[in-house]
Length: 140
Image (cartoon, rainbow, N blue to C red; front, side, top):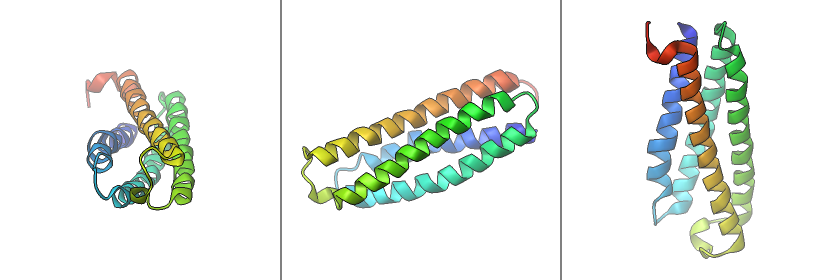
């Protein structure tokens, strides 16, 4: 029961980040610098919660332990990419003042898209793990 709850919270928060928060904040035309900083803060708080939920899932699940490790690796990859993006962003400065076609801004944009794609991939894998582990929600 605890393993199902932990994985459900992980999937739910991942869904919110990928399909609600990211599109709203990152598609803004004005004040991209503020929106990006706000998104970064949300993302780093999500990573803490997500690692905690995956750790609970790992420790409380008997048959799902084999699935918890790939989920944690995927999340770790995304965390590492976010750390790189944070460093890259510091070298750019205020993104609103940098031309759209600037080399560093283009690099930042591409890695940002890769980060979002990794989050989507983590979401899809999480759904598949949930279905495989719990049978798609049959039974409580």
